[in-house]
Figure 1: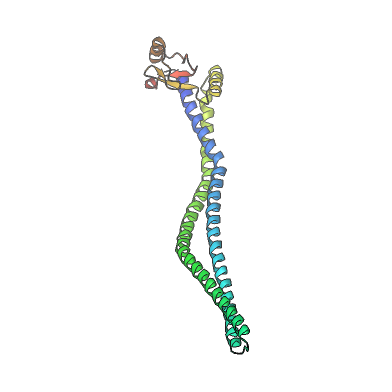
Figure 2 (figure 1 turned 30 degrees about the vertical axis):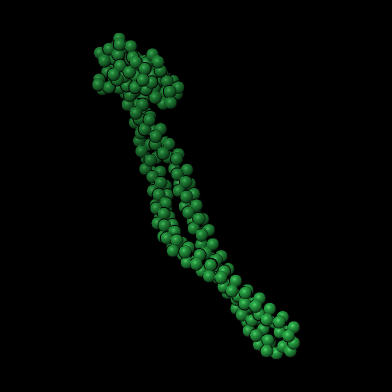
Length: 236
């Protein structure tokens, strides 16, 4: 194979690796942000559940306070009942006592419902807290590793760019310009392997004579379909 073409193949491999590294580096902020967003979402979800538990506890305390107040009122009503002098007053007092007792029963039923709900949610909340702590640790570690990967990737990128410069120096200016033009038009893939009489990039069949020339000679050939420069790997 033409040594220049061999350098061109190596150059493309380097440039594809460089592009991959550049993307990894450019994706770091968005990856970190995605981890942070997930962490924020989990934390917010847990805080919402915790706030609901606190709200239930506050409602329970409020109802318990109302029950205590109503019970104190009921006690006074029962004491006053012994002092009434007319049947009308007695009947009115009994009605007021009945209303207070019904109010106490209603509030105690609500308290019981809240206690049952709190009991059901308590175990679930504990499990959610454990899961949050575990997931938070994992996400924090992912954020740390992602941020720490940047210097290593940057260092590798510098080395690859140096290698790229060396490879470019071994490719003729005219061929390099042609390579760049094709790469720009073909998403970075300017040179493709010829295999089984097909262009590996566009999968169009190569003319038999051209394929034979690729195998036997060092001539630089281009795919009739996609215009990419072709090479035969077994000659590498």
